Image (cartoon, rainbow, N blue to C red; front, side, top):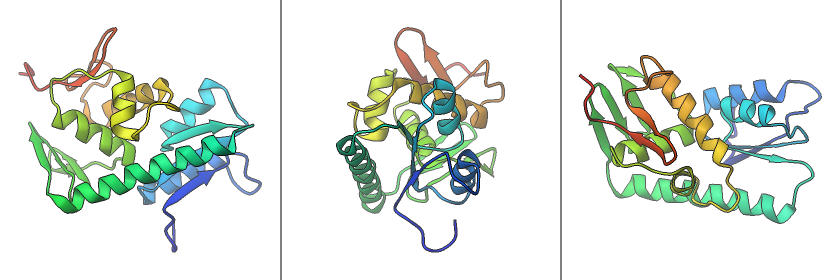
Length: 193
């Protein structure tokens, strides 16, 4: 994304000149700005695809204007809280060969920078900060998005999968981002040797 940099992006997937999913991917490569997809495409596949390419939220048409405004405000509040937290203290967590720095908004694995979307970063930071604690999908929605009323628990599944692809040697057999069946997810720091 070139100048100016917006605080928030509402993206329709049905654009006349380009593919909305591709534009979402390009925005995510260049920026951590929150992206909300607003689309007539309502299948789970479309939602998972949009979230998988970097969107932070997904709403289908027709939509309620009050719900759209509430979601935007929730994202902006979360962003403001995140910025306030970053200015108050430096948070750096190192687990094995992973380093996540909340102040610099960076994550590295084996001394290599790994690009994370804003929500991927927030979820990974939250789980690493609370290592070995199990969180339900609802708890993760509340911790990362700052609300649980409008959240879709499938969003958490998508973000966990994306994070596993970025940090696990074998994403289908994760060592760190583990599923606790029937309960939720945890960042495991025990028994990896």
